Amino acid sequence: MKKVFPLIVVLISLSVVGILFIQMSWIYNAIELKHEEFLREVDNSLKESKEAIQHQFLSKQTTQYVTRKAQQYFLENNFTSQIWFTKDELHGIIDGVLRENNVKQPFEFCILNIYKDPVFISDGFHVEDLQTAFPIGLATDNTSMNQETLYLSIHEDKNVVLRQMWWIIVASVIFTTIIVSAFVVTVRTLFNQKKISEIKSDFINNMTHELKTPLATISLAIDALTNEKVIHDTDKIKIYSSMIKEENKRMNKQVEKILQAARLEKEEIKLNLQKIDAHQAINKVADNLALQIQEKNGTLTLKLNATNPMIEADEVHFSNIIFNLLDNAMKYSLDAPHIDVETFAHGNGMLSIKVKDNGIGMDKETQARVFEKFYRAHTGNLHNVKGFGLGLSYVKAIVDAHLGRIKVESAPGKGSAFTITLPSA
Ligand code: ADP
Image (cartoon, rainbow, N blue to C red; front, top):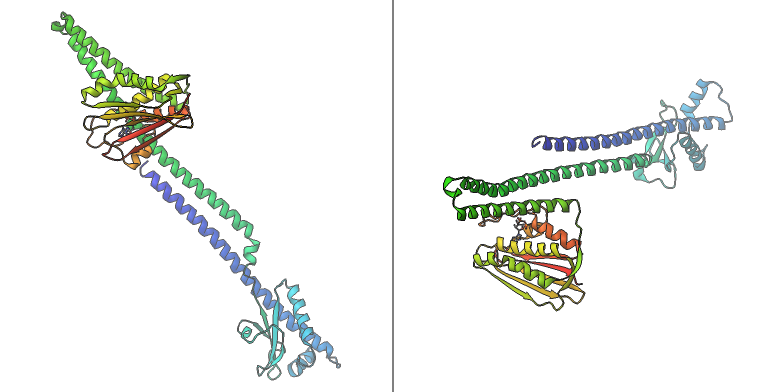
């Protein structure tokens, strides 16, 4: 997978570049072909104009030169456009021939004699046009003295190809964009899948580790219980069985946490909304954690000053989220945790609960990701902090289900504060 993936990316990129290159060379070839066709059409038109002018010249003569040879001789020695044609007549002849040859662009012309003096010049013809104009001798080729040269100035319409092929170009731009976008989406999805599979394997490692510790303790306790010396000592039996009970409870809690996350995944949050006193619920959770905080020489200060603490919430989920926030505040502290819980009511019928700690804090990237499922930041000096990275994603899901908000303020080394805001009852 590691090597196939970049190879696929390179191959598809090369193919897209190749397709673009082929399309561009097609368009370039089409422009070239069109240019050659234009030159051919102009060349034909010049030859046909010459023939038409010669033909009209001969038919204007009073003496009829019936044989081809006689006509040739007359053209060679007596041809001149000057006295037999007007400018408009010549314009009409050239215009007719060009139209027959499908050349529709406007044109200008001039006729110069052998000394390069102008015989006729159309109104829009400029001297510098002589550089780019297409020339043809009007009399026969072996004429020496009375040769006149017709210069046809006509601008090639370079956009004609683009105009004819516009829908092919637009379609190919659209399809190429679709291919490139689909490619980008595919690559992104593959990267996400890779990230998810990494997160999942992290989670499995984590979970195995979390469940192994209580299992090992239980196994040791059972070994002790079967020990001859212990089996007759009721006090020890009590100690070991309560140990087993405790570890069992812990494992149950872990499994419950994982099941809770799985349930959230399926969007199965069913809230049992009631009017509850947030202060009472917070006090209950705080009482449960008081012992643990004391053991760590920490303090938990409650500043429950909101005038109206009543909220419309699910009591169990609400207690769980307060517990999770307090538990994290304790877990992510290097020294004795000092935790403040504040409540304040907003004028707009919302109640905020802020849980603030003096712990390790978080950088901006962690703050942006803490509510993602399975996300766990590297906690540096804080080793052995257990968790699945599910607590805060659960908190966020429950707050969202209550149509509330959650925000985090933190700085590395300076502690963190989580504020949840829920609708008052
Ligand atoms: P867990 O605690 O099980 O790892 P959580 O979802 O509760 O999962 O938290 C996710 C991550 O957010 C934690 O791994 C930790 O890095 C960070 N975190 C959460 N709360 C705090 C806090 N109070 N102080 C510092 N970091 C925290």
